[in-house]
Structure formats: C-alpha cells, structure tokens
Length: 428
Ligand SMILES: [Zn+2]
Image (cartoon, rainbow, N blue to C red; front, side):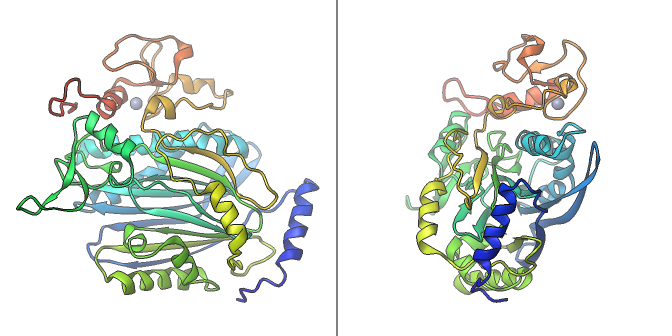
C-alpha cells in the first residue's frame, strides 16, 4: 500500500535485465474497480478479464473493458455493449499468433464499430452512444473510441498518456469541416434575442459529438469510425482510467490520478467519482473504471508517485493533441522505460482505415466483406477504394472489398454535398 516505491529500482532493473536476456516476461496481473453515479441511467460498462482465445498451440486470455455513455435513451448503449465485442473479434482472422492478432486489432476495431452502428441503425432510428473500448493483450493496450469519454494511462515509470480522442464539435475543426461538407449544420443553442449558449452542436438533432454509434436521426455524417491508439507499456505496469464526460468535465487527468494514489482500484474509482461530484454536482451519469496493470511479481498497487521532471519530458513527446488523421510515422520512440506507440489513427475515411496491412496468410479474407464479414462471390465485392456511386468492379488486388450493403453505408457516411444543398445521404 506504500506509495514510496522503495523497491522499485531493483524490481525494474531485474525486469529489464530479463527482457534484454530475451526471457519471456509473464503477462501482467489485471485488477479493476468500477464506480457509477447514475442520473439518467444511460451509462453502461463491460468488464471482462478472462476472454479466451484459441491459438495454434493452446489457449490464451486477454482483457476487455468498455464504457458506453448513451444519449436520447439507452438503446444504442445496450446494443453496443451486447454486440460490439463479438463484431470486432469476428473481424479478426482465426489462427493468428499473438503478434499477428495484436496487429490485426486496429482494423478489426474499425470493422466492428461500423458493423455495430449499421446493424443498430437498421433497428432503431433514435438514441446513440459514445464508446471507449480497451483490449489488453499482454503488455499491449489497444483503445478504440468514438465520442467524448476519455481513457488515460499513468505509467509506473512516469508519464500520462492520452489514449482516446475527444470527438466533440468544440474540439476539432477537421471534424466540423467533415460534417458541414456532408450537409450538417453546426451552431450553438439559440437562447433568444440573438444569444447563443452552450457547446457547438450539430443540427438537426443538437448533438455535440461528431462521432458515435447510433444517432441515425441526426445524420449519417455522425460516423462510428473510431480513433484507435495502440501502445506497448513497460513491464513496470501502471494505472488506467476510463471515465465518462461527467468526470472529465470536472477533473483534469492529473487531478483524477492524484486524488486516488495508493488506493486499490475499487476505492480509487469511487474516489474519482466523489471528487467529480464534489466539483460539479451530479449533472450527468458519472462512471469511472480504474484498471491497475501490475507485474505478477508485484501484486500491489503500483507506485505511481509523480516524477514531475520525467513526466514533462514524456508528455512533450506523447501528449499530442489527437488529430483526426494523424499518421503512423514518427511515433516510435523507444526508451527502456517508455511507452511505445505502436499504432495511432483517427481518420473517418474507410479506405484509409481498412487498407492497413493484414496478415497475408489469410488470403480467404479477401473474399469477405471487410466490414460485416459476409462471404462474397467472385466479382461481387466492391473495392473500399471505389469512388462514390462507382459501380466499377475492381480486380482482386484492389481489396479489401465491401458487400453492396456495406458499400451503401460507406457512401452515406462519406457523402459530400455537391453544392451546399440540404443533406440527402439517407439510404436503404
Ligand atoms: Zn458487408
């Protein structure tokens, strides 16, 4: 329970020595806690620490945590909680080894988010949800997010890392441009007498987010394509916090981490929610998940005592304002203790998101829809690179391919209004 970390230098050096000696380091111990104060009953969570995956030579486990902050009713949040993970896992080819599986995750997350949104919108027109989905495999953390719940990681060896995007209209000029080009109108609430109040919203509908699952009534330009960030953490571990906007509207990342140092995850989550309510009162559903990722040798709360100087260094390296279309170059800083960014991408364009390298050994995947995994007959698939309304069937090399139904979805999401007319991207 001590936060002084007297033994840390020895432990870390031992771990690093083993790592360099190429000794396989055990998977981390994952301990989590959850706290929630409900106002509308539209926040839902997923906490799974023992998901099983069959590999060529046995069974391995990974952990999944999710936060779904619904709006205009709970339907989209409940539907996503029940279906999203399966849709993601179904988009990963079978029989991959661990490294290949981790490599395939960013693309599978995009496919799973879009499929979940498409399937939900075929059932319900109203309600939407933010999603923050975290998958932990060994020491690799992959986070996919739409909306404004936030996920941060505090490394035991120093540094706070922001693993999710803020898809608020207030936060991204690029997203505002994308939406207005697709026919949405953006403005603040008119309080009468020419006074505008509150955050920027998208009209019709008045949603202040640019991405979500659901929200068909708002428009197809509110897309479900997630920002995805994948990092490899040091084997010293650290603490992760996933919270809905109720927490982050009241507390900074530093304040949330500082208020619960030394506490086990359950108490830490409760403390963060309490601090957020003390600052702002219960104005919205307020949910917090705290996850400690610990070396197995050290089954105690990680000592995340701030190391201000080190922290500032790392933050200048990594605390980049999440751009909606950041590239994957220049992200590989390798220090012995640092978090290594393996992947980061936020573009809303499917041709960019589904075109990443895919395990080539799974050639049969070329004959399946990259979003819904429907099997395609020869000549049936439409290249994800095909332009709007193009009926040209490209050749095999121009995959990945979409089925006709997913192609309709893609065109609706990426439709650009030709002349500033009203939105006309409604489909089906
Ligand atoms: Zn499809």
